[in-house]
Amino acid sequence: MRMDGFRKRLFDATLAAAGLVILAPLLATVALAVRLALGSPVLFRQQRAGLHGRTFTMYKFRTMKDTRDQEGRLLPDEQRVTRLGRFLRSTSLDELPELVNVLRGEMSLVGPRPLLPQYLGRYTPEQARRHEVRPGLTGLAQVQGRLRLGWEERFALDVWYVDHWTFLLDLKILLVTVWKVLRREGTTAISEEVLVEFQGTAAREPSRAADGRLLEHPSS
Image 1: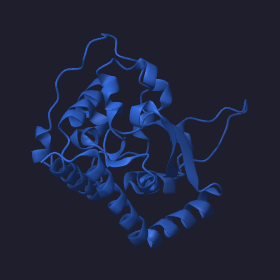
Image 2 (image 1 turned 120 degrees about the vertical axis):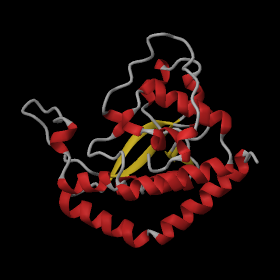
Image 3 (image 1 turned 90 degrees about the vertical axis):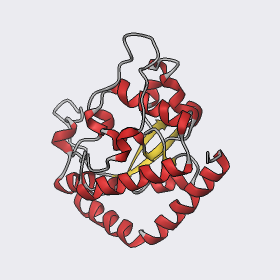
Image 4 (image 1 turned 180 degrees about the vertical axis):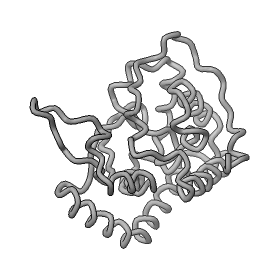
């Protein structure tokens, strides 16, 4: 049965609120560790594009130092990620503050990952349909391959999700996400959103069809 937007929002808010309460000791521990290792601020804030392309502030635990070169420019990410930061990213603990975004209605538990606002003008009309739903803490593209996928493949999966999302599909993606996080599968010390900047699709045509069949194999 297809879940309408109201029920999806209720599901998201309920689980996000419960998660923040249950995980409060863990959140406090991680926040203290970040404060001791990196100082203030504890949270990393960045503008991302959400539902209908509206921007919002996304929260994560800080994982990098603000080290700069002699000309005042930030060093590459791989030179600024700390040992603690690598651990937080490999376990996805740095993503937990996004539960606040879910509770506030800016994100969903499941949906296309929120990307930088500068990408909005680079999508094809088909790719831009990923913004017809709230962005997710996890999503179909993340459990289907994440870093192994190119941008066009990720966007095709995002649009497939927009057209086919159901309550059962969301549950399946959440369960596979937990499985992959526990196995640290597809994780990295470098943020997936900044590995390769999306410059736009050369052929301005809709992406090829995508499907969710790999979800049947969470161990793949």
